[in-house]
Image (cartoon, rainbow, N blue to C red):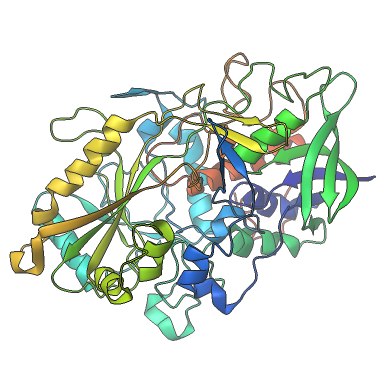
Length: 531
């Protein structure tokens, strides 16, 4: 059995970022990834392959609360969910780290403050090459540095939308975006600003994902090793149940065992909870770190709505994800509770509609869907999902995940939808560009859409109501950490990826001190090395 200083389970926003931070330490690090590298192929940019044939979605079977099987939209690749994410890299608002009263319940406080996370947000933005512009969003929390790259320019239709919103008294802003685009020298830019970013893999490695900017650089260090097709099935402990002593891996169909001074789990909120539950022992009969019965509970994944509006004039935007609006993040007209975030999403394509609504579009002629797509302006509405103990992950007898979930904050989600609908005329000054002002197609993200999953192993100060302490170490085991979005006590209303990245850097710094490690003087490009 090989021994390491650190074993990291999962290579996404949490695990991959942690590996990148720890790599210059010289400590022996093993990355375990259940999938493989996502193949670079023409199909990466094929809308039908991605949205109809689900080419890159895992064949997992999960069950809902009624026992009905479904295929979750999870992706097991090096880089995790970031391989297909939209690279919208927002900070949580400062207020999100405190208790916030919502119409339908309370969003609890974190055991750390925004000020404690802020330096790591700054480092994460630098590591993941985020484009943005400070000072445009009135809800934006204070930052210790500007964005490392300038905001992406709006294309003409989105610039018009931004101008119209600003003229009406709103505060549109350039959305923070993680793409490797150099608009000042587009001929030498890695990113070509294409229409195949949001929801697609990028064969150019032009997206700021965890494989490209964290795992691959980490693997250049001789002390870092990665195994792919390495599915961790169980953690074993010492007789006292105080530390993990062995990590049991199904590696290409063969059982292998590894040990480490530190074990960090970053398998995604559902699979991290599953692993702890499946690792029950006599000392931990309900699952590892689960004396509080909190493992798997408080599952969150945002109440999200993909909405498109239609105008008479075509929307020729190619890269649409450049604008956001947070005017209703904390309250809105006639509604004194948080509503959420509005942002643009990737430009519509006909095959996306067939993938999302196969029955509704089955008889629609291709020319009709193409016309819809050509005239579409596409929005993403995100409302905070409140943690509820009954929204939880458990494990079925066949070993598959059961996801018991009920929407926790539906009133705010409805308010945000109606707020956007009420603004349609405001968004266009020339009503001759509209068909009956706007016509709508609306799609709710179903339970299978688990891209923003969080909360199943939340951090806190009280072991009776949380799984992890403020450093993301389990209360009950001395060497077991969780560094993905499982640790979130609340999820806010913006995309969680940057917070997962920043938190992994923060935990990485804690582990550096615990391991007695230091960055070598030559490692000037390492995250944190210049601090």
